[in-house]
View 1 (tube, rainbow, N blue to C red):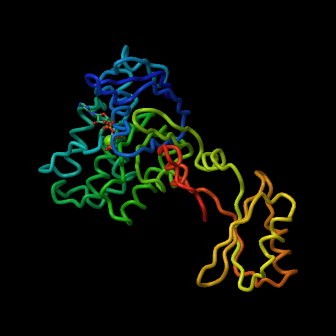
View 2 (cartoon, rainbow, N blue to C red):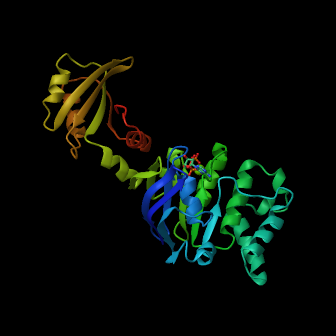
View 3 (cartoon, rainbow, N blue to C red):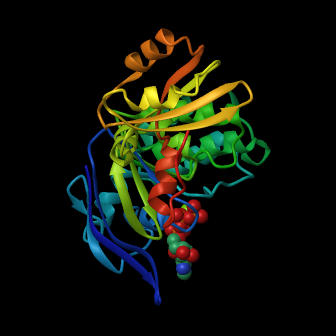
Length: 315
Ligand SMILES: Nc1ncnc2c1ncn2[C@@H]1O[C@H](COP(=O)(O)OP(=O)(O)OP(=O)(O)O)[C@@H](O)[C@H]1O
Ligand SMILES: [Mg+2]
């Protein structure tokens, strides 16, 4: 549905994005994950036709964004970082106005309006002035203007920024319901957001794509070994040696803690030794308090990919 090839944008001698290439399948929800200044907004503004690229190409539903901007705009809904809302209009007045400027035919406007209000859970506040709405509701009005013409593609720039936890959950729910029917790209620097609503994540840093994968695959890709976290109440002096002798164990780190003794057991990749370690602990009466596999969170992956000196990842 979306194909981006070698997109580069320079502001003078400052490169905002460089050689960005990726595809998005129809119905997919994709996250752009990156810190401030990574180039997320720049990429989105180019895709939505708000500004030209320095070089590279992109097509949306087979239409070139530079050669056929009108065809592309019809198929895209865009929620910018700060949506341009008219605070002195009511929600209904504003969305009617947007429906008109987006070229929705007069006789279809009422239906488009009702549908947008429903999908963004705005029906109850439709008569209120936008200026009097809370930040969360304003953001939903921003989303409603992006999808009122039922576009195939939605580009949402940080749709949950500035919302409280409850509003974030509601907004994510609205976005999840768009999946399948619409192709969605959203940007975020909130890491759990990418895992919560997206099937695929593009990690972008200093204008370059540093990783593209599913949230699960990203952690697997970066994991060099499996680690198991073991907490024992009554370990013995030989415990570390016994653990090391288990086939598949590469190394054992031991650290005393207040509620027990923690052992981090590093195992060969692809070997799940939890059952074996549990039976050793029971057999030797080490007082097994806890045993779990240590997985890298998306946050660990992100830090690892975007920092030159990656921190040592432990439990
Ligand atoms: N109009 C401009 N003129 C010069 N530099 C710009 C302009 N717009 C953006 N930049 C620069 O391009 C880079 C990418 O900015 P962009 O806004 O795309 O980042 P972002 O990933 O959206 O960041 P944020 O998370 O803060 O929204 C930054 O270094 C920024 O300073
Ligand atoms: Mg931005």
